[in-house]
Length: 223
Length: 223
Image 1 (cartoon, rainbow over the protein chains, first blue to last red):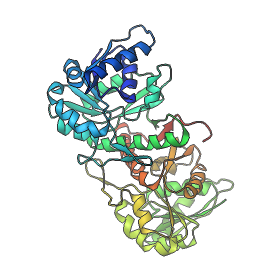
Image 2: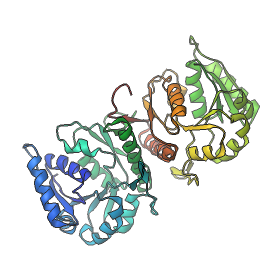
Image 3: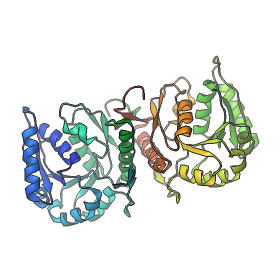
Image 4: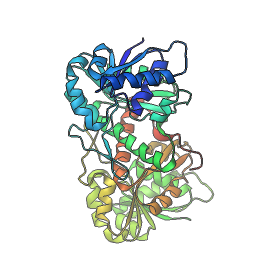
């Protein structure tokens, strides 16, 4: 089923990367920004760069609130410093919707360092700020540069945290990105571990000049 | 180079699993226990169960302190509840040696849950308790049941945290376990993320009745 997906804070590399893959998979994507004009212009630029593909969806941009109002599902890709205030302001337009949080609480000071989050993780913080939404954690560990080039294969699992129904819908979406397998990583309270993996990968990428992802080895086929 | 390896708290599944693989790789392994007799009897039992292999090393057991005194390198596999008191008591025999911490701060209460560690991680706690040793984090994410059966292939990366020289020596040891690739996961302060992965894997194993490991995808070959 085609979704209308708002990417909150979608003008950065991770947001544009996810937009690239999800538009090509047939979804309507709205790149949201706190600055509506910037959202629109980044979306127009990205749209012009995409290859023509049969079945691709629509891509446009605008303000975060407007994007969320129109969306059936939202993905959060703001920098962690903007996480709480952004979501707090979007509680209304996100009410009753699935919100997929991909934010990693990280700051950079001689390498990536975790930011302590009182709620335990960015995803749990989102769940606390959005009591009328269904919040799932996903997409943290996908390399943005890889996502941005639709010809590059993605070799990574997407680890999902949250409730069953939200994970099922998010996992189906994730697996529309070629090469991605969705893996149920447990309840919301495990989100901190998934977010932490991204900090490891950023470090590994820096040391190896690579674009790495994570795979869970040893899972039975077809699960 | 063959090492003499003490496995501190080595009578549990992870300790016996690592002992199995490292003995077959040609190292001398001493299974340490707080109860010397139990260490010796578990080692004798394990030894009797091992297949005859050319080049296998010696396996024996005893008290933790005695095992550490004889060892050139120690691996820590105690339950987290015993982590600090055990290491504190071994500061002398571990002085000047490489100590590889494989302990995950986890407790079980309707599924695995993290234990908060003031030092940030078990490995950083070990480093603080053993100022005269070189402490590296490794082996957390290897499935014990798989290690215990020497005929089962291991399909997993070992993520290493700590200083370069300790990681080099530990990585070389890890890669003597067939199927294992060692990956530099960064400084000691990233140990919490590696330890957290184990909690994710325990949960995934439970849901899928599987024996999973972690792989870093997208690393250049031969690194």
